[in-house]
Amino acid sequence: EAPEPRVNLANSLTELGAYDEAEKLLREGLQRQPDSPDLLFSLAVTAGFREDWEQAEVMYRRILDAAPDYPNAVANLAETLSRLRRYDEAEPLFRSAIASDPDNPAIRYNFSKQLLEQGRTGEGWRYNEARLEPSNPEAAKRNLSVARWQGEPLDGKCLLICTEQGLGDELRFSAYFKRLARSAKQVLVETDPRLLPLYRRSLPEIEFHEFYRRKSGRSAIYSYGWLRRDAMPDYFIEICSLPLLLEDNNEAVEAPA
Image 1 (cartoon, rainbow, N blue to C red):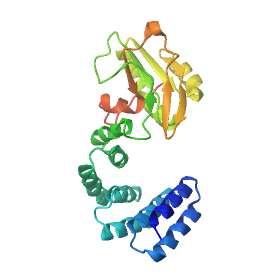
Image 2: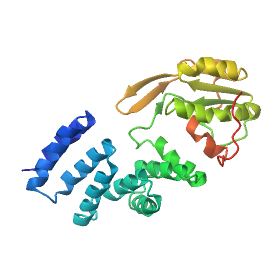
Image 3: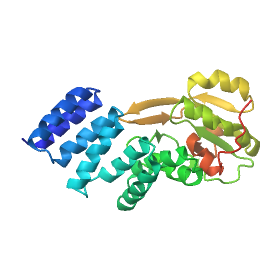
Image 4: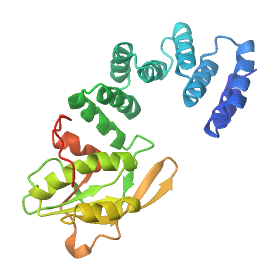
């Protein structure tokens, strides 16, 4: 009768993609305990994995009716409404969840996605930095003893642009490479090996290198043994942070050749 082992098993099944088994297990539990917030929350998460956002919304609202202070219920409902593009309803919930749990990077990162989809880039790029916080289990780790670039002048300096996310993000933000190459003495770019031929023939003034990474849980760990010890960069920056530091308003980005 205890919900905890049922929830744990359902969560494991959901992670494995066995959504039907997980949902059946949870609904059996809800027949015995129809107002269990733990069972409802797990069912809502499972619905989210299936991208059944309407079902997830129903579950999160049931939780909040029964237990208004249930952890992450407000934040998850905000994300669910955002997925449904009901931005006006989602925003006050996001802001309430951030105020209640200001140290939770996942809430701020999810809110950034909505802001960017709405074209609200100023606030969106700031919240997007939450993806890098060490408390985020998906944050990349870098074996790199170099200062992070904070927008300092790059005259006479070497800047390393570090890869993150996927190919689409890399191509989108590569639009900044030429601009940075005009400001810095040298620009190094760490990238997916599949992009090396495209980049090298398009941007010969920039030095591109294949990334070296491994997975540890949900996080990627990057190594930099390829950097020459006698020519270390002065700064590094994650590629998806470039629009924030370059104050891009998303209106006039120069694309590479």
